[in-house]
Amino acid sequence: MGRVIVVANQKGGVGKTTTAINLSACLAEAGKKVLAIDMDPQGNMTSGLGVEKDSIENNVYKLLLGETDIEQCFQNTIVDGLQLVASNIDLAAAEIELIGEAEKEFILQRALEKVRDDFDFVIVDCPPSLNVLTINSMCAANTVLVPIQCEYYALEGLSQLIHTIELVQERLNPDLEIEGVVFTMYDARTNLSLQVVENVKNNLQQTIYKTIIPRNVRLAEAPSHGMPIILYDSKSAGAESYRLLAEEVIHRGEEEW
Image (tube, rainbow, N blue to C red; front, side, top):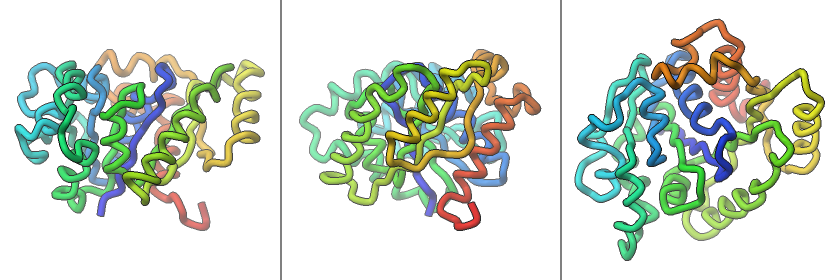
């Protein structure tokens, strides 16, 4: 059964979507069958994987409203072995339209049940807020991967996110775990980046991935070309880092790792 990993942090600008796009692509490059689900109304994961978000008929919005099946939402991406359930701004209305809907937190979980066995990994990109879309994603997930930017306010909001995850565990999805924390936008030239990493390690009783994603110009440029970093600049520091992260995710829980 495929592992469902939600990439979440309600703080914007932490490399959440960049991580979701590039982790998905690197897992597929490693020979895994991967489904990416864009649960963010901004649709940046969709466009970052080379799919024109406004031309898609069957998307996450229609899936959540019960107007289509998940299989009808699958889009091929520019990465072999990686399929996508796309999103666009229509999804912003879903929260209002789902008010009063019974068991609305479990819509994505029920949809995924049909297809989980067809994939090794399902990577879900959440919006930068703790709303019904994020809760839906967490109810369908095995684990939550939390990207943290290496900057002064890194820990701000993180306790709120962990509290939300604990509430979901308690009330909706007892099997949910924190996959781990991954540091992003690391700048080796500054003491601050190093201090943030040390601070989080000392204050957070969570798994922290060994791989640290550097601040990288090529990584920042790739989405505007509709490509993950492994296609845009395969030899860049950003591409190598996400490949290492994918390896860690694949081998999570194995003793030698």
